[in-house]
Length: 416
Image (cartoon, helix red, strand yellow):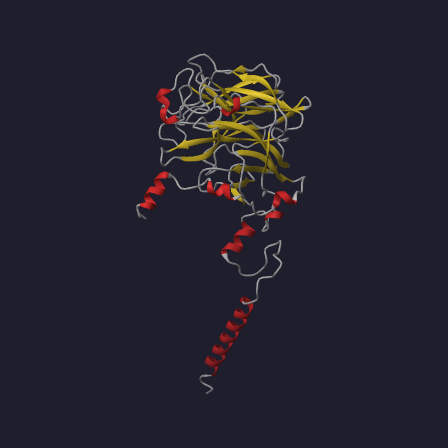
């Protein structure tokens, strides 16, 4: 017995330790979700909500919000016949006691024929909703009722950048001057895809007049690069004493098209811009909107890609992570960003802006309309209604997402 005593004691101690460990692991997770990560073994899911998000509860997450929408007053759409479209608004700025916004406006004799029929487009008949467009602007004192002021950027003469269409603009204020960056098309969208570079015009006042630089300021990438064909949706912010322009590129071809976001940086608004070596910096999104938040940059990543319907954050403005997942995000969000050009390291966030609804009208006479959205992505606001976890849709919202004709035929034929 003495000979085996150490073995028996070791075995007993191991058993006792196992029982203690098991008892410790069986202590239930607390009923009240801790705001700080508890010091205990956690599942991967629980680890994630503490490590990956600003707060484990959505209502405590400063980068989580629902979105509310309001119809705007002051814009005429010709009864929805498809001949007038307003879309892709810019960031909103406040100058001279009123708000300013710039946007893509198409006012054509006929509605678009569609990108798949681009060969039928003419100098008067557009292929896409944004073809044969110019950049207009409007002002408002309350953000709900707007007064259209007129054209800001006209299409230049052929063959200058944008002679076919100028679209999807955004605003920069830099050292007392104003700069509008926009896509400049030299052919009807659909003839070779939706390909274009970025151009710029500048002015001493948000009222204009605007002087075109008549050059490409952010060129397409070299052959074989992810952004070789398109630089879309330029979105400028001021950071680290420089102009940072985020942009989207469509790479790959249908049905395998991929959309991601890149970044180009310059010390002068007219360039040269240097593309970031880590591009793409956001793996999803379409008309992605960004704003200073705390010491970093937040992004509304609403559509396309594996991380759509997320709000993301990068402390360095480059390496973005998902901060929240939400729903009913605004299409082409154009927030009012009071500190967009202040080079702040204490970004306060956003509470409202404009967006667009696409595919309005009927019988294929598609056009887009501008709308207002409100949210709580601000450090200075606490709106519990905006922090609710879910949106309840009426049944007709779901029925509109019905099966296609092809899907119904497949199901009726008994095919899997």
